Image (cartoon, rainbow, N blue to C red; front, side, top):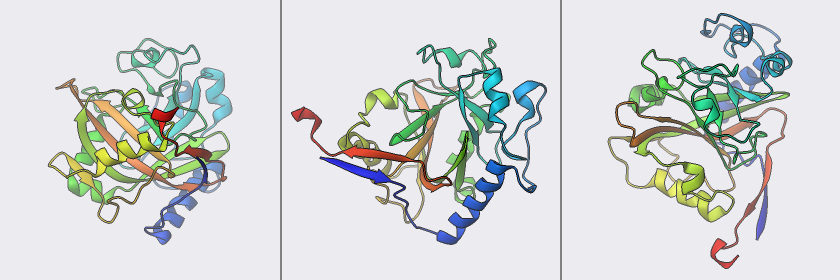
Amino acid sequence: MLYHCRNNYIEKNPAKRVLAVVLALVLLTGCGSISLPGQDADTGARNQSASGSHVDFDKLHKENEDIFAWLYVPDTAIDYPVCQSSMGDDAYYTDHNYLKEPDPKGAIYTECANLTNMCDFNEVLHGSSPSDGTMFSDLQKFLDRSFFEDHEYIYVYMDGNALIYYVFAAFTRRNTRLLEFYDFTYASGCQAFLDEIYEAKSMNKLVRSGWEGAVEPDNFIITLSTVNPNDPSRQTVVVGCLVGDVRGLIDREVDYTDPAEQ
């Protein structure tokens, strides 16, 4: 059975979500100014930052056609373009930056199994954790309960749209490829990952109060993932649920059939 799902939001705090959407709209359109911390940059696309103004996708696409989004997480160094290899090489951006220059820190990227329109159940974004604190190093901050409680939103800007995700979980897990380990094309695979999130809490797992079991396969989530540089067998993940879609473009059908019967 296919279930049509569009913008199935969870209304945990409507007032806060309205503020988040307003901020996303300002950054999307570039009107007005805001006083959020920016990221210093040197040349080209590096001069852009979602924390200070709208993102110029025309300029970004001229520098790299693989850039399809911009990721911004307040009070972290995470303020980067997001790439997907047009060559179908999921390993390419592990050692090339978003300008396609060789770089051991790589870029923020999604695997080719994910849709670049952000309409999958789980959009998995990868990044390294170098010792200089760039890229996805700051995901470790979300493992601190105080930081986790005080930082609720992830922003994704696209050409003509802005998405707001509410961070509801952060934890460490065995380092496996989520898009390979779970079959997110079926509701059962979506639920299996949610079950992993909601299973008994531990010192390495934070789930926002009131969200236990709240997210379902017909929602949309984002997972920011980085391998622990001190223990490559573990990865840190920060998971958010879509609560704002400025242009109303996020849409998909959820397959509730049993994959074993296919």
